[in-house]
Length: 225
Image (cartoon, rainbow, N blue to C red; front, side, top):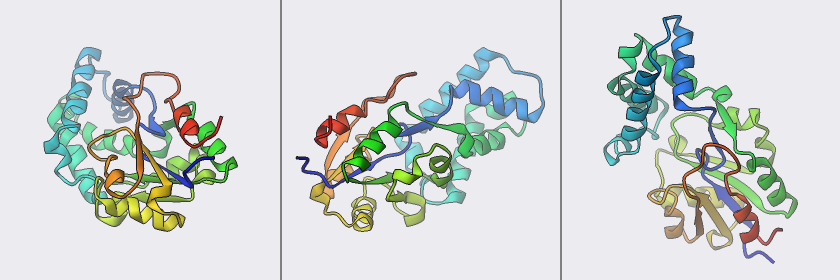
């Protein structure tokens, strides 16, 4: 029998991700502006700049996930610095609006089956996410919300992972003790904060371009399957 009564998940790149490639999103944003399509190589270069900069300690220290306003400010500045405005005037704001839209997100193929299996075994399920915008509309659209008992987002609490505050808040809302809770994520710098909160933590590798996320491991840990 599983030692766990609840499972907490990170959201982005754990349960959900932006649909398609970053280059595809950039082309979509450019099309929205009604300007001539940019050179594909230049689009790929700009998106690579976005990815490289977004994961640096310097960018993450800017507090982008502490409020709606700060999230928009930091991300649009990053897009601008990466070269979006050179591709098309107004592209940074247009791309930002696209990336925070519920329609731009998809679930991994094994996300919904995993949540269903956990729920059928009576486990409580929550999300603990560093984000500066509301993920609930995307969860609703993807059919995940019926399986979620709580969603704890950093911008609503003014604190990000790895602070134990968000993890313990989720446990309190679920009515479970940390030691009976499994935290699942993909970022060792942030999601590992669950350890300090008294939880077991399972970290996934970086997602591949297509196919399942590897969430079947969670079912094994929970004594399912």
